[in-house]
Image (cartoon, rainbow, N blue to C red; front, side, top):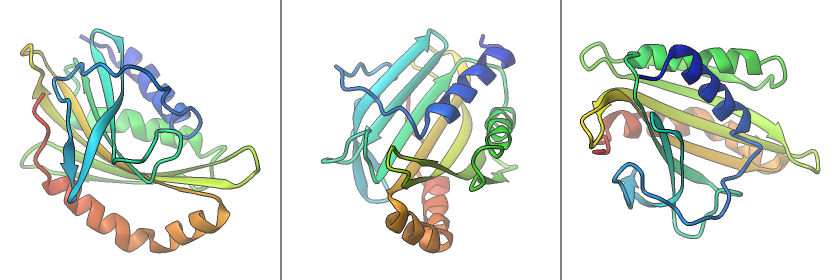
Length: 198
């Protein structure tokens, strides 16, 4: 089982690398038995990148046709971690990382919704960074945490997420102006989407 400490380190790395390091081109391995495409809100997302930093933790990214991890409009993420932590505890680790990021990213903001019937937790948050030219990159994410079992029957936590980005000051400003209505529809789509089967 993955400990709280080791999962916290991985969560921290994920937040810190989110806006700075694109996924590298490679032969993609489907560790989760989910080759895709995954359909989210009427759009198809194909498996584009995967990583298994240790046997207990796997992350896979899915992109629409014509988009790349280096510069995307939207991305679906699926992660599985073998752990006994409940969804709220997993979300709390991410929230703690976001709180630390506020020291260098004043745009960071988050909101948590807990489904008492299912135990699932939905976290939506926004991040920003700047590119080499000093232009903003803004990223909004909806993270849905749930408990599940993988194909080997191991219990753990699953993250099913949608991410959207805007690049450059003008696009970032337009993105932020439309975010309130936009994220409402995306949160609804995420909350009601069928969860992927591992």
